[in-house]
Length: 290
Image (tube, rainbow, N blue to C red):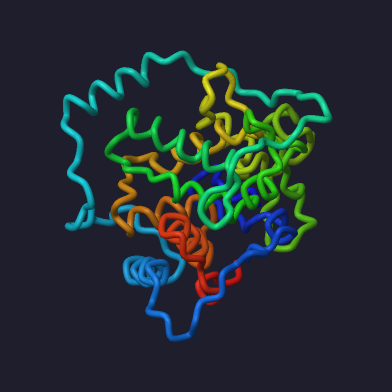
């Protein structure tokens, strides 16, 4: 909870929001002990090989085996020019009426809520156009969303991607063991609190981080941390920041560590991401306790 760093050195443990929802979904598919090592295990093993322990390396070399060739300079320049001339969105939390109905959209792989997968895939398309070098896949965003809030509490959001009830983490006032004390940075405008901050929305951003990275994922001119489309695109921008390439497992793990400086957290996110891309549920052993 509140794990997005204010300066780079901040190390905040994850939210109790996830502790309430659990790490393994009710419909988790059992996998035989004789099954071959899954791609999720391979990914986690590669992470541990590249980044032992909890250390982050700011000079990790780009992998020699990149899945896709880098975009041309002209394409990148054009995309960045388009992004630079875009009107910045208004950063705020939009007040919505009670009684809204959950989105009636078919679920995706492993039961991922339809409205959530729509948000993740929309973010992938936008980031492909704006930052093709990053190579952000929708299923990596889904891995973050699964660990952070179980996709807004199992897809309890309307068709526009707005949670039926706001998603908040615990107050970061030092009362919860393991969490840093983070004093108020937004006057309660985003997290509804004064005095201290708490993480907000289905992707669990701190207010200060959201004010810096907040993006408009649904084209309404507002960057609302509670909205799934806005939160997914913002998470992608946050992970891609600094020119990181998600096709390189070492760089991908560095990006995920920005959310929570824990290799167990990285293993969970990558296991779920691999599972969403393959349709094969992770084994419990691939989901170490965070």
